[in-house]
Length: 509
Image (cartoon, rainbow, N blue to C red; front, top):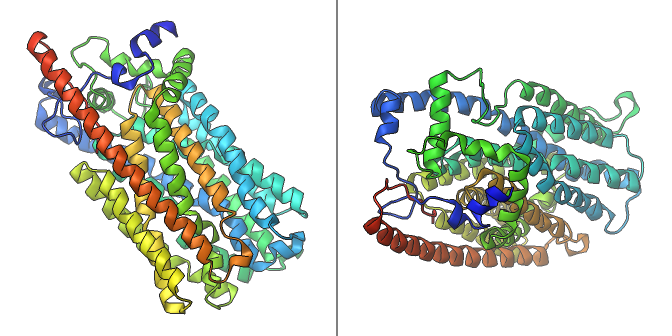
């Protein structure tokens, strides 16, 4: 490990060879020699299209898993509408405790899990195994008969679910270039929006049609069905998910596609492609010593902590999604209609998020693609606070849901800002997501039952958190822009005395 640290020195500015660019929006590498390696630029472009098509098809199962992830996570909110609290004898803030204890388990496990994944380098085995366990835990939640039983089940669910989200983000970041990350990250993260939409429809069907079957209440069947479905999909994932591109043999890629997959990431991370051992540099990320070094690098980088706090505020501002069925129920409809009303806002939010992410990748811009959705969300919070009119409050839910697009762009921004070495990125993504989940944990207590049906205080908390998040994003953008200018100056001085390829890296803004 000491040898590794001597080249890293706990600072990503020192680990990265830098990438030259006239703009500061992303990497531009002169890889003409690399193009010849694959038959010339035109042949390389065609090969890259085939590679991405294969990769996208395999990664698409992550969306399905994330849909189930959120459905399992939010089952308690839907079950609340059909006797969950009454059957378990819950009182006061006990339901909020059941929701929030999930995040205690979730927070504890994220960093160790991603370090372990970085070490073993086998996401195709590790992630599905964790998914099978959480599906089983979710299924068993349907057998709970007391507050403490439900509390333990939710804690355990968070503990095993912790592996998936940061692990999936890390897997995506190991295969896609920085200017591809926002769109792919959003495709993946849209699973949460889709689950909010269709999860409510599935819950409505189960709660209406399965009550009393084999003597079990409808809310218990909700956990049985959704947990069992998760286990089934996890088994399929074992044969679908890819391992990292540094894996020695990848059976679903041709040798040329495999070589290009590795070359793309080397160039995108601005490693010197003329070094003979460049292709092996990423392989070091899976060694135990480098996993520890990645932990040190991530914890010593102020940007990681800053982005973690920013995402904490963003998660707090989005805490309304945990209580979305409760918010639609405040409009006076029965449980079935309240669940059905959850779907349209999230379907619109999915389309909006996909467009925002595509535009973000096209322009190589991140900050304003976060700020604009959050401003729309603030408008929704203020609108909901201003009236109890049913139609207006329903419109406000549409506006609030749009702010999730900013959350997804922020994930891509964080991943591209802390891009290497891979072991550092693994820990950084887990650390950022760990702290951000504290926002969900506290957010579970921001929707006190006695504050309903208006929930004005809750909306005010979300609006304030969104505003603070916007200010922190703008400051981060200014700081990264300054760091880019400083790197420009250093590179200009270096170029005057050193004859070397222009392979320099810049922060996305």
